[in-house]
Picture 1 (cartoon, rainbow over the protein chains, first blue to last red):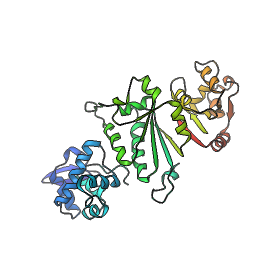
Picture 2: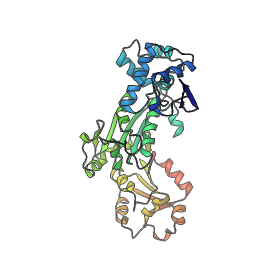
Picture 3: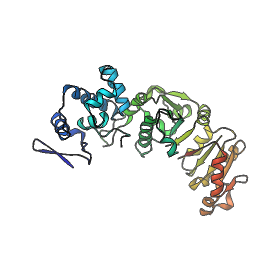
Length: 110
Length: 131
Length: 100
């Protein structure tokens, strides 16, 4: 599959995750979100950027339980909870946010 | 064994899982597969321990750089294990000595145990998975 | 007690020696597949296995021994088991550790 962004096409897997992490930029994230009828707010970006940093550090997309805990540690308890994260990313915070962040699907997600 | 792994945590029975890692990281797929199984299994909130022995210790060697070999360097992922509540990492003393390695050479804090101590640990598990 | 299975030839793979470092007295060692080459007389590891037999029970899977034509060389005292004997062993011991 491919994703078209501003006249350029990017290779994705069958679920829409970027094939090459280096292809990622903010426009790609916004185009992916648009396909899900989702407008990216600062709160979305906070999580997306967190995931990209997490991946750089650990070479893995975190499981949702780990993401929630780590977000809580970094951004505070009002954000480190399932309710907040599912409101931002109704398709599943780890799955959906990882996709917009250009990361592979979290290990263990099916 | 598969059935036992499919009992999700929370209300379920907590079992003691031991992963025994004996292969070097890049020559075969065992090390990466083991790490992935551990990370996936962590979602089931079991009591997990990992043993690194023989060349499996090299999985944890600091300074791995795969940029020139076109493989993924997964050694940083061992540092994420703590966040998955996998905190019991053991290395075999005999294997460390045979390779001239000390815990300072490794990417994560580990507990050094002798083969005999690890033998006791094995007897005390519910499930043992070898990689 | 654990039943340890060894499925690679101990002449080229160190699983057996690591297994023997860790295995408790009273545990079982079962040679299967190419592991059965570890249960033979006249090899460079025969003495190691004979020593282990003093404190541990040692078995070899007979179909794998026969397939390799080494049935006349099995160390005396190594107990040969068939497939159903293999299954019995897995229930006699508390758990199985499959060394690779």
